[in-house]
Length: 244
Ligand SMILES: Cc1cc2nc3c(=O)[nH]c(=O)nc-3n(C[C@H](O)[C@H](O)[C@H](O)COP(=O)(O)OP(=O)(O)OC[C@H]3O[C@@H](n4cnc5c(N)ncnc54)[C@H](O)[C@@H]3O)c2cc1C
Image 1 (cartoon, rainbow, N blue to C red):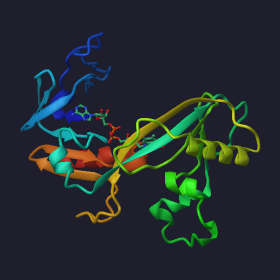
Image 2: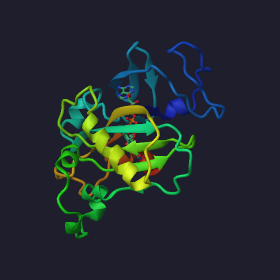
Image 3: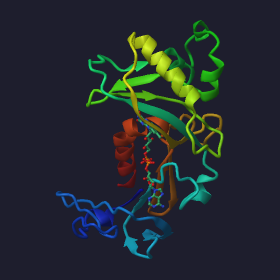
Image 4: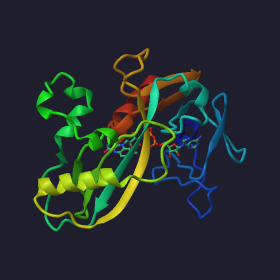
């Protein structure tokens, strides 16, 4: 999740095996990652998994990601969080170097950093792009292919299928900027993240992720939104510092 426990950091439970029950202890021996472990209950600072195994700890940090309806549902139902579904895709190798990451001007419509900029020059957004809250983001992968995104859907329940219309727009925009056809698309996917809802006034104005102490020694951290991978080292550091 998931769940981090200080006790677990100092407890080796063995090395990886084919069994989902087994945990892998990396070479440092300072933590273990338990695959296939669903935490279904917290008993004080003891996490209980779906098989009834108990994981005692000094501190529990619950990081449920976008699973807002699970273990911490009651608490998170009153938090200022919303979920967002995105569509993205990946191409075959481009065959040349893309010398910079690319974002198109529609990106400026969605991010607080641009709130104070005069966006009139952007003009009316294309209705299809507006419906999908679409922006072109394009970055080259290590294998030379391109990762291209993305859209933003907030109305739940989210569809299980992906919509072709935004993909057509993204391809057209990418080709216009590159001045050449894109290589064939090799993957399309959608994903969901949780983020602070800017429309909901929070008790921490300006917060960019959700952090709360549920009970003594039990902390929940989620809602970092579309920048969670970028922010994760800083969030981890702050969370850790808050414990000590
Ligand atoms: C399509 C897409 C593109 C993105 N692009 C970027 C980007 O370019 N840059 C960027 O910085 N961020 C990006 N993000 C956002 C980033 O991925 C998230 O903010 C980040 O992954 C959140 O980290 P997390 O640890 O809070 O949650 P997650 O990464 O969602 O991890 C939570 C994990 O906990 C597990 N879990 C939940 N409940 C339980 C339970 N009870 N027991 C056990 N396990 C449980 C879940 O299965 C999940 O594996 C993107 C997200 C998506 C969906």
